[in-house]
Image 1 (cartoon, rainbow, N blue to C red):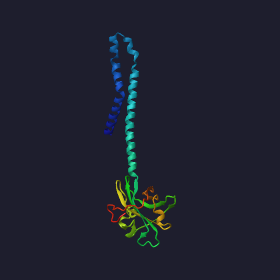
Image 2 (image 1 turned 135 degrees about the vertical axis):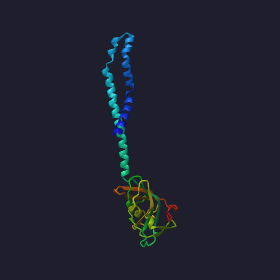
Image 3 (image 1 turned 30 degrees about the horizontal axis):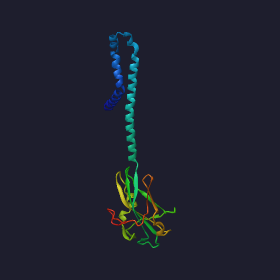
Image 4 (image 1 turned 90 degrees about the horizontal axis):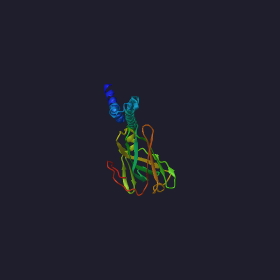
Length: 245
């Protein structure tokens, strides 16, 4: 208690001195004013400045000093509360790093088009899982398709852009982020897979097609990101993964 009282008194005095600096000069001037009037031979001037005015100004400055001290602490509390609120809520961000579109997938008997997206999900808020991944494919002419999410229970091979790709089930992002919360400052990488059996690969694998990925945090807040298809998407090795995209 005494520590808080000391801090409050110090803050009030600091603000009061700032506000009442000119007032203090006025007080000193008012105190020596009778002496000046006497030296000038004008004693009737002493009552020209009433003492109530001076003390009134000092009281107003003191009240303003209390207000400024309170406002400073209030703003600090508001900032701390806002920061605490930010840290108590998830703040996930998803990004599509690379894309592979293929109809040459191991066990793909109906020649469906597969969309393999290499994705990163980061978090700057409270720990959260990431679930319910979805994909919308919009072609340049405005047609929208919604491929079905594919759960990979085993390693799978596919061929895209003349590149053999080995998809490891350990890198399947929905499985990783649905069971292991992403903590503050962390980032998870992996792939998501979708298949579309209603159109041919040539329809969706063209420049201008937009892939919009969505997912949800633990509170059900939807996170979205998108990327345009620009075939051929140059294959490249991403660190930490044993397949090429």
